Length: 337
DNA sequence: TACTGCGGATCTGTGTCGCT
DNA sequence: AGCGACACAGATCCGCAGTA
Image (cartoon, rainbow, N blue to C red):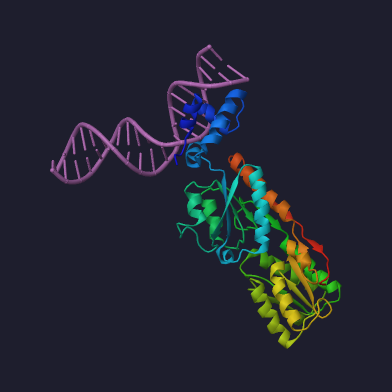
């Protein structure tokens, strides 16, 4: 099938290519009849704008690259899923398209198939990075090349970077405090990869609350490396062989489902025998049985904030300054605690 | 003849300017 | 207001002049 170009449409409509371009881009100052005639031809020919040519001329693509950590990429959990959905709808609202790509905090640019290669070569205008670590090569890379980006998480290395983040120290604190206040004394805390700043911060808040409420150090345990429901299942299963803690605090609602399985398999009741508390408030969590008590992050507002910051950077690169928005976590009490 | 190096044309869509 | 002419984005291709 023939691929039509503006020239073809212009010829058929007996106008200049520039006029067709005006119609396609919904610019004003085109007579109603002319516009309708051109739209009709566009419809019948199936003409579509050549995005590469447009990007060439405009020097922007309207594409934003979303990077999730490579280790997490084979496990993009429900939280990422929900977050990216909000990012996408906000991006679309402002006229951007999103592309999700895997990446690694330890190295970039080794793979010609990944998003950094595309970004560097002008196939995207800016980036959003998830799952940051204290030392994150991806951030170095973007800063060095002066590529606009926003972090979902935090960064303490550069002053110039922008991010949206949950107050994760507070989230850890809030969770521990809630469990302690409901009488739990032995608490197990499951966290993901220790290198992620989010987990470091949550651990910090957890320990702080335990100290403030004088929970003995032998009664509180932190386990890192709980990356998915399977590892949560395995870990709590092992723990339950030895002893039953009063409460299990799981960073990530989705992982809590694995813990539920092991606990119920053992014949224990939630929350009577062991309380379970999550973080994220993913949409599924209220349908767990019993419904999961969790710590909510305002994902929609964070996503909107991230896109807004990036949009400002792209529209006015000269005057952009670092913007950092910290969102407060909120305890959602349901039936599992 | 075989090859190198260079300038200009090409691709498509749009910014700018100017004409009616 | 409504439209067209021209120039241009950047990589690549093509043809031609010049050299070995």
